View 1 (cartoon, rainbow, N blue to C red):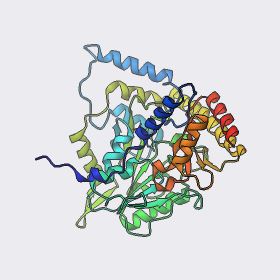
View 2: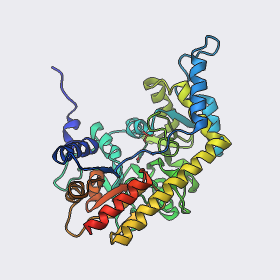
View 3: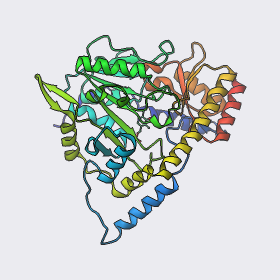
Length: 403
Ligand SMILES: *Cc1c(COP(=O)(O)O)cnc(C)c1O
């Protein structure tokens, strides 16, 4: 008899995105003539850059030529890409500390498996659901509580009161998930916050998994990498992605930095996290396709870098329009400066889902209910600036009518 992994039974209901889809579909059935605006999107509106598609096409042609055809590549990624990444963005690392992956989703989900189930996990709240849910699936939590939080997980609240800068855990934890700039709050962690966490991890022999998927959107002086903080390479893994900065959501390419310095304990003995992750990658994956890695390496050219800056400018402009537009209508809003997301307070005593449904039904705007990102998101909805300018204008017009 096949028995199931009971940890899957601990998961709360339907995942966020299918639930949104279901509600939107139902509303479209109910109001077939309404024009819906989608301000809930998590990927860019700008297409791939011309030099990226050129690299993609050229590499695909190489694969169709007997002389230049390639089979399996290195599991951790081709040296040409790892070297380009180090040369441009991570000069203090060696190329073999960079692991190329088919999207940071997979790495954020899988990094936990090289660590013991006995580790206590702390997670920024609200946050991308993947950090908590993959630890629940693995068995690092107790069942879901009435509060909507999982037993055994330590939640690091990002609130209006603390400026969305989480406090340190007040209990022992071993593994911490941070994300800066954070999705959904759209707020980056300050140098002070990241420094406190790095010092905490160092003192407690804990490890930080830092999700930096939106680092390229930062316009303030917040750190773009956790490695800007002293000693971070002793305690942190950083996960980065081309999905948001360069429109790679549909191509799938990202990378994870696992420093040689990083160590994990086993009955007092020290082991290299890098060696463990490399072992895992070599066993479980076979790398990212050659054309995709060529496309990613085209980002590390003058043209590629300029195209990223141009795209970031476009999204920053749109985020600002949304942020100040909503503010002028009277909403309390955060984020938008270092990320393409605006974190908007719901009216008094109105919950996230309630406001999401109300907005969907009355002005046909699709947002994201904050509570979908954890209990810390209750009382908020999230807007995305990944929309066309006319859609943003129209959204603001419709919200004016609501007010
Ligand atoms: C979009 C996103 C990612 C990127 O995921 P990929 O798998 O690289 O496309 C990672 N973290 C957060 C918080 C995101 O919103």
